[in-house]
Amino acid sequence: GEISEEERTVKKNGIYIELTPKEFDLLLYFIKHPRHVFTREKLLEELWDYSYMGDTRTVDIHVQRLRKKLGLDQELCTVFGVGYKYVPVQ
Image (cartoon, rainbow, N blue to C red):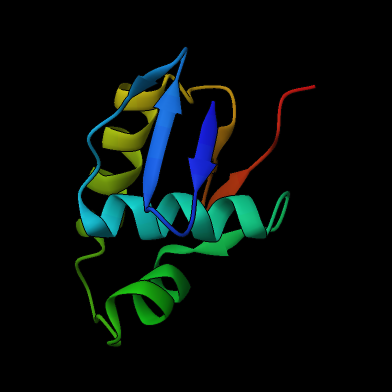
């Protein structure tokens, strides 16, 4: 797929994929930090601008949506007990 930071657009197989602003921010953040493991709390701090005590479901829901919309099941990995990481597929 193609991602344009300036236009805030994502294309997959030549087709534009509708992402919410937060989904786009999360995708971009993962792509800019390949193979780096992030906790849900860290992602909330970085992208939602607040420290979120307790419920980190927001991150899970956004990751699930990105996987579904962009077919990133392999790339967006769950690191059990920690959080998530993005691993580019060769």
